Image 1: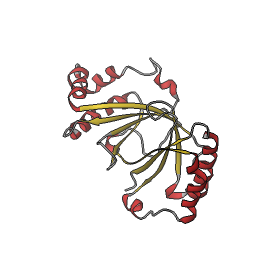
Image 2: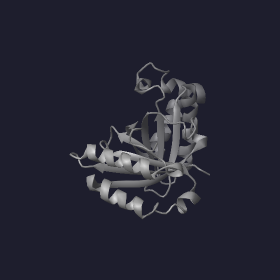
Image 3: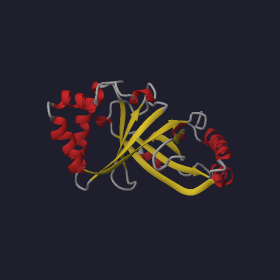
Image 4: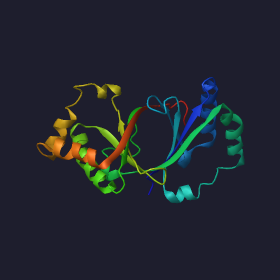
Length: 222
């Protein structure tokens, strides 16, 4: 099943951003095609602001297992032409798309996205999924495009809730759609926002954090 995204985050030296972007673009367009095509996003807000996220896939675990390093020429190009413009800060992770929790297809992307990283308390993962299913009803009522992922062997257990802004950031404006509380209670019953949603967050979630990312189509694969 092709439901796994490979994500890497790179952080260029502050005075070498232009050089890094050019080198990244050349590398992606020369070496990353087909199943290994790159989508590049620029991180606008949050603790990783100023970084660049590279998404590869979706692929199956079997494809990833057999991937290899794409050859010596590929590795040498990265080492010689891209790496010199980077800082030592770096992260890499796998994420599995959760179709039953999402309102949009995995590959139905948008140019702007807000990602909320949700970290359940140990032992509460199933209950958090149950709550996301209730929240999904409110997303659907508001015609929101939301893709949900779960981290796979990549640090603490977490869900990544990616709200894809098909109409741009104006979707964040107050009044653009009915308030979340109203939609949640319409779908899950009167009083459920307090008795279910807020209570579950207090009991089941360790912490969350969020960020906004913009697609950089000019830097990714063609």
